Amino acid sequence: MSRPPQPQHPLPGRAAAGPRPDGALPTTPTGAPTGADREPAAPLTEQDGTAGQVRLADHLVPLAAVRHDPGRFTRLLARARAETGHAECLCRTPALKLVIRSRSGRYHLARWPGEGDQHTPECPFHQAAANLSGRGGYTAGALTETTDGTTIRLATPLQLTGTRAAPALTTPARTTSGTARTMSLLGLLHWLWEQAQLNLWHPTWRRSWSTCHTRLTHQAADCTVNGHDLTTRLYVVPPYRPDNADANTTLFTTFTDQLSRIGRHQQRGLILGEIKDITPTKYGSRLTLRHHRGALFASTPLLDKTRRSYRAALSTTTLSTPHATAATSTTAAGSTQPRRIGLFLVERTPNNYLAVADMAAMLTNYRWIPADSSHEVAMADHLITAGRSFTKPLRYDGADAVFPDFVLTDTPAPVYVEVYGVLGRADYDERKRAKQEHYRDAGTAVIEWNVTDPLPEVKLRSAAPRRPPTR
Ligand SMILES: [Zn+2]
Image 1 (cartoon, rainbow, N blue to C red):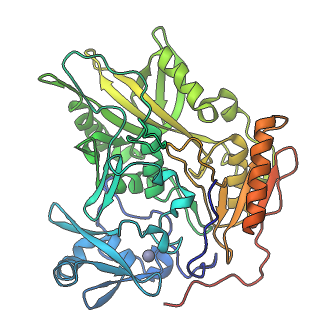
Image 2: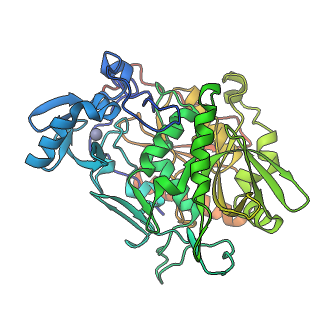
Image 3: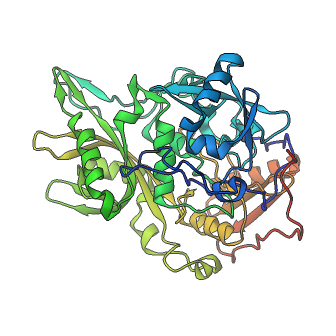
């Protein structure tokens, strides 16, 4: 049972003076982040995102500008690294340290390990508190964040040696206390989503697959998985546009070219994208992804097992029956269709097909906010329609961990949102009672929704929106 977080600082209001437009980083034709626009739109605090500034050596500069085009600040970043060893984020007072990393001769800023929850929810360096994330359920060997980046030990190998057959679906090994020694594909998917802040929402943000792609590739850049650079082993499907189709094809070919047998080693790769369709074939199933031309192939036993593990995401009824709720009726047409995100471990067959060796799936709402059920999709839609700021805790491999379904972050103290979607099951009712008692004892404000009732009122009552802390 998780303890409710204690606010360490005043929480910023929903009308913060310039939260970033959730992922407006420019991209190359292939979708990779770049610093192409020399002049970020002005004023930075409104148009370009981050309200905050960062301190580089003795200079204060807009964080958005440094993130969009670090090349403009090379001299200052180098000086700060040499003189103080770090930069500072001014979203809070006192300022918070930031890592200055150098990759291929280019500098960029990153959150200081273990301090992500101290940044404001609108800050690009914010990370959910440890008690609102499954991130803490790993040994240091499975997940390590240092000032140099993140190293992850995946439960399933990215390289097979000799003629050994690929292992079946793998789950993390655990210590006697239940801490995971390795990370599953779902854990990696949750890590990427949380690092990219795609489990957060603010009413002024806009989010498209292009946003998701930019942020996910950005996060992968500082990560090593099983000794491999994640950037080379992970293909995040780029957003399709007619003018970047050829570049996407080249990028994908580069990715698949490495998935061949080199000597005794069979290389494997990871593909992350939104599942468009799963259709049966003579030998198994064919999976297609949005924005992507090719297909992946999964055996029937693997897909059956995956469907059992990821019922909410892969149930055929989840996607065909959008909720008939107030939220869905007031949202833009078509926007309430849930999405299924897949992370696939793939191997190239001798016939040049891509075979799925393992996969994880995640249900999200139309803005890519993760949800554990179609009811949670409806609630996420409802909160967005109501103009709320919120976060969705992700459990990673902590199957038994207890987290609230959503946490509202635009109130002085966090408010939990619980969706009770199972009726008439004794064990569920028992857990629900224990949760309610815990929240009552802790004095945590909770909005509850029993799904047989209409969706609750969730609009912020305060007439005067809270302002962000003065900087
Ligand atoms: Zn910050």
